[in-house]
Amino acid sequence: MTRASSAPPRGPNAAEWVRRRERGSIWLLRLMTAFSLAVGRRVGRVVLYVIAAYFFLFAPRARRASLVYLQRALGRRPTARDRFRQVMAFATTIHDRVYLLNDRFELFDITVVGEELMRERVRTDRGAFLVGAHFGSFEVTRAIGRRQPDLRVAMVAYEGNARKINAMMAAINPTLADGTVGLGSLDAMLKVRGLLDEGVFVGMLGDRTPGGEATAAVDFLGAPAGFPIGPMRLAALLGRRVILMVGVYCGGNRYRVVFEEIADFSRVPRKERESAIRAAVVRYAGRLEGYCREYPYNWFNFFDFWSGE
Image 1 (cartoon, one colour):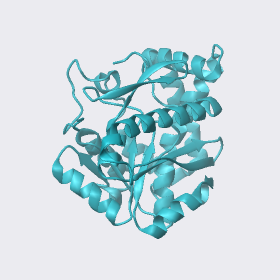
Image 2: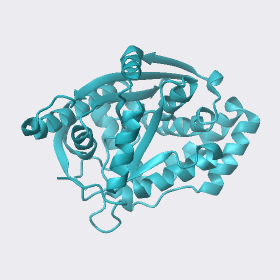
Image 3: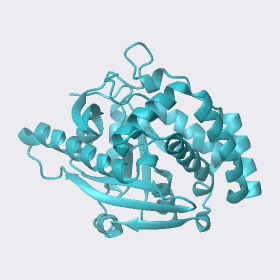
Image 4: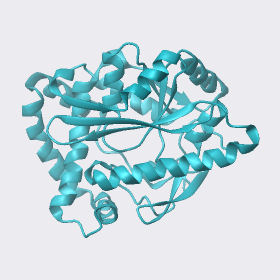
């Protein structure tokens, strides 16, 4: 059985994205937040071009990884414009967190697909797992959850990552501190079960492992890649449905949020659990691949995703 560690490994067994030093700081994030809220989204976006250009020019490893990914997603060699569009989309979704997490919904044109699926789960008061990816904006979903009080969303992550996420959210909006549950203990599992029983949607990201966790090799954009089994295993252990969520950035102030069910573990016999988990991971990867091909500039894993690290 895969066990969630209390924090992502930091040694040689850690994945590349964990070993890589993070850019930026909480202090800089607070400064950018204050500036963006003061001047507004349109003026704030001017600064994004400078930030995106810096990242594009002075992050060679990320640039190489972007080239590999975009060539797979686009089916051709990407131009410099293609690669800058991806970086700019990434910078935009980070910047938009400031407004989404401060309830400035009027700034955005958000289209929701699959809303009835979510409402049906709300009516049953059973909750479900929302499995996303480092694709587009997950904060759009959190914003919808706060705009509609009957649709509540909580995030779970490895404990080390949970602390970083909570620090980031507190820097953007202090009222959101401690909004993420850290995995790594029996108490965390009970907390997640309690949230689900209250009808809360529990969000997880299913496309990245910190290393040392069981993965399934799945064909993704033309080559095998390791996808973590942990999110689907947790859903299977708790006997819950899994809903894929993507918050696609469509340019300007437009987002397209899509919900679609990819697994239902509520009636899976124990002896069939492992095969059902594997099938769910494969379906998740397949749907994510489809969105990567349709919206290639929304993928934000700036490391060698196919290296097996």
